Image (cartoon, rainbow, N blue to C red; front, side):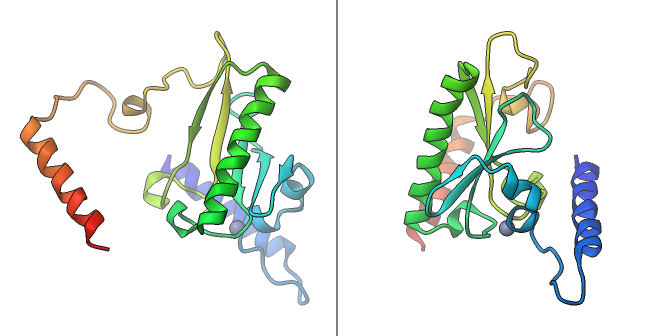
Length: 172
Ligand SMILES: [Zn+2]
């Protein structure tokens, strides 16, 4: 996974160098500046846009991203947040109609350590159908984290974690 992320980063750098000229600044963000992504854009509203990813898990795998180049969901304004989720909703409806999607895996990787290879927030919308060849292991505890079985955490430990997060919520 880390190797793939590094490869993507490297490709972005290579494209940036290849595309630069004395009069154009280097490509900083592929989502903001790639003409290919601009050409395949499905739709946009004032603050968000949707386009198919170039390496789809299944046909119809769409990315929804804010227009503004921000890395994390907490960087969004309330208007951008609303616009992003309005577009996610619209794309899901359109995927049901156009590609007979029966369900969806919607997810984003947040931060480089979590596999976010492009530091421009993007939500993956993966349309699913019974019997498709998409994500076969969609239980997040298995495909995102440690494989294999894990022990159930003691209730006291869960309560301590909940309390620590609750305190942080009140601390800002
Ligand atoms: Zn960007």
